[in-house]
Length: 333
Image (cartoon, rainbow, N blue to C red; front, side):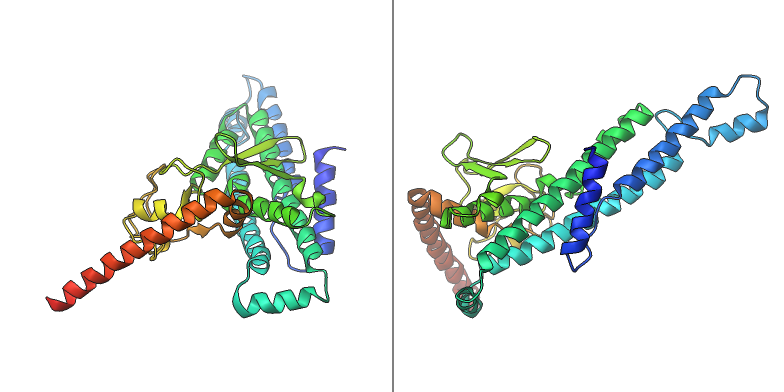
C-alpha cells in the first residue's frame, strides 16, 4: 500500500476515534501543489526560443527549477503552520495523558479509587499508542512531502525547511514530549508486563549503555535514538528538564548553568540565560519537567537514582541556607 493511502486510512481512524479536532499534514493537497508545479515546469521547458516576448514573460511566472516563489508561498507557509499546530496539539495531548499517570495528592487518590472500578491503565495504553501513531505518521508525511519537493524542483529547499523546523523547535520527532511518552510506555510495561507490549514495543531503552538511550522504532523501520546524557555533568540525567531548544539536563545542572538556586527551578532563570549546548537565550521559561523519564530512572536505576537524590537534597539544603543568610544580611543593612 502506498503511503498516501496509508495516511488517508490513518486520518479516517483519527476522525472516528477522536472527538476533538487535531491538526494534520494535508499530504494529498500538498502533493497536488507539487503536481501543478511539475506540469508548469514541463510547459516552460517546452517553450521555444522564438516565442513572442509576451509569452516569454508569462512563462517567467511559471515554476522554475530551484526557484518557485508562487509554489514556495503556497507550500512552505502552509506546511509551517501545519507543523506548528501538530507540535502544539501533540504536546497538549501528551501532557493531559501523563498528568493522569503522575497525578499527586487528592487527585491521585481519586484516580486510584477509580481504578478499582475501571481499567484506566488499558485506556492509557490505547491513548499512548494513538499518540505515537499520530506523531510518527505526521512526521513521515512531512519527510516524504519535503523529499518530493526537492525531487520536483531539483532543489535543497526541503532540507532547508527541515533546518528551519529544528530552529523553531517544532521538529516532531525531536519533541521532549515524545521522550516522555516513551518513558511513560516503558513505565507501564515495567509495572505490568501482561498486555502492554502493543505500546512498549515501539520503545526500548538501554540505560547501561554509553551513552544511555531511549530508542523509538518508526512504522517504516526508521530508528530514532535519544541520548539521556546531561551535557554538563556528563552523567545520566537526574530529575531531568528539557529546555525549549530540546536539550536535556539534570535539574541541578540546568539551574547551575542559569545561575539560579535548585529550589527556585530552571523556569526562574533570567530571560537572557542561555542553553549550555546551543547557546540560545530564553529557553528556560518553557522548560519541561520530565517526570516520566525521572520515574523510569528511579525504577530501573535504583542505586544511581538514590545516590543522585541524596546529593541533590544536600545541595538544596546548602543553597537554601546560603539564600536565607543573604536575605538576613540584606534585612540588617
